[in-house]
Image 1 (cartoon, rainbow, N blue to C red):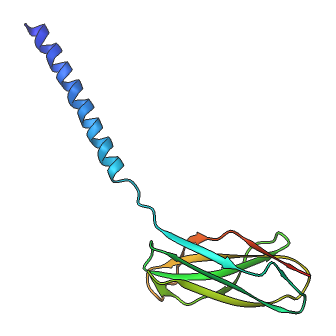
Image 2 (cartoon, rainbow, N blue to C red):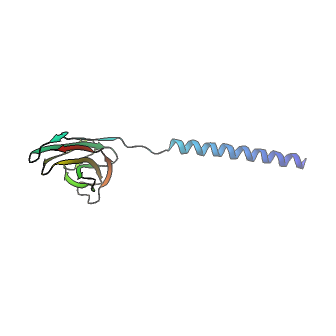
Image 3 (cartoon, helix red, strand yellow):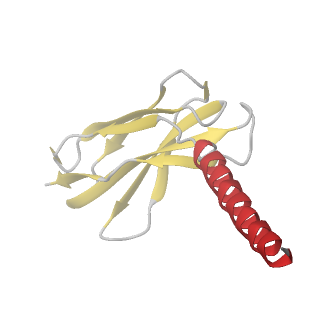
Length: 141
């Protein structure tokens, strides 16, 4: 009698453990990470002439931050990215925009990209990079 009772307790403990594990797994899946929605786009001409001015524009949004700002970065010849211009800080839900008028000073390929930064307040001094566009190339001739 004792032997049957011990085996029954082991089986019951095993079932409880499996049910508990399945319950925790389903709670973990339901509380998975939520992904922020957003987008960033950049527009630039494919080619420009030396000495002429061309326009690079970008706009973007992201619902992960209370405030947003879009900045343009550029580079040439495989160098590091450098900040070119930043737009105004806007509230979440609005489209952040930036426009830069660039004078082509010498020939060669220049790359531009847009970066969306998230801020906690309009005066936040530590913005967080939320999204980055793919680079677009302007061939200066």
